[in-house]
Length: 298
Ligand SMILES: C[C@](O)(CO)[C@H](O)COP(=O)(O)OP(=O)(O)OC[C@H]1O[C@@H](n2ccc(N)nc2=O)[C@H](O)[C@@H]1O
Ligand SMILES: Nc1ncnc2c1ncn2[C@@H]1O[C@H](COP(=O)(O)OP(=O)(O)OP(=O)(O)O)[C@@H](O)[C@H]1O
Image (cartoon, helix red, strand yellow):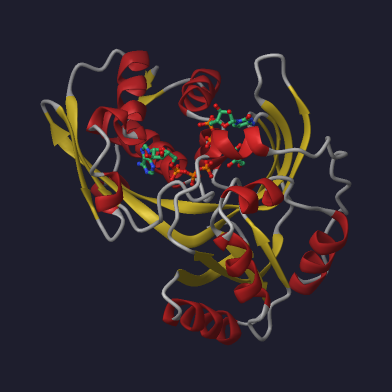
């Protein structure tokens, strides 16, 4: 680890953006049971937020609309504190931090909320503690926290392979709009992988670029799938209703599930139809949000 020279206080608050698997193909299985994936991962503007401040001990306060969903589990199991302890251990940091998690994303819902929180914690605490692990050490810490943490730490649109550790940045994607919707039923990732009955899919065969957002949606529909969708619907049938509700929204170019579910997404090439779809689905009692996707990385 080497010291970082100076950091602004505003860097101590980091967005943990929702991870969306635009495509998710299961291409094989390792001897340890983990599945090999080929996935196109992007990040929506819809996000949790991690804020850190100096303190002698390590503490976590959870706020926000989905904070209560984490209240049942011991704080020690929270991926935020696990990330903080991993970094402190690797960096030999004895001091603590006061961490606030603003939980805006539904829990256990396929958009990597906990993984994004862990990644944001690693970024914020590197600044607070003024440490910079070498990239290989940081990658090891991230993967040790979960298969989705490396891609969340990278934060850019990526092709993700291996079990989540092989990341290739994608060229700038065309800009569009996304609607995320969720019926409010947590879906456990291991159960979905276990319930998967189909064989393995081939690797994705990506074009060099997409002319516009509609071309991206067309390519996804014709040349890729989410291999976990059928298993997730079998475990949690309301997911099929969410997919149908998104697909029925005027202007929807593609409706698909993200990750292991139950959050599903719709792609739109205009902000107004995306916002209208999110409003309509919210009125049905589901969690639904619209946001920006793609364009130049922030
Ligand atoms: C499905 C995805 O969301 C796609 O982005 C991720 O691969 C899941 O990432 P994650 O939630 O961070 O997953 P982890 O917490 O590492 O693993 C949870 C469980 O999911 C299964 N798992 C996860 C990732 C993977 N490549 N193969 C798997 O089989 C394993 O049973 C594992 O015990
Ligand atoms: N900060 C956190 N936010 C959300 N879940 C957390 C957090 N810390 C621990 N967890 C636990 O991690 C599990 C997975 O939650 P998460 O919201 O990350 O799932 P997910 O969105 O399905 O993730 P992925 O898309 O990476 O599979 C839940 O059982 C939850 O209790």
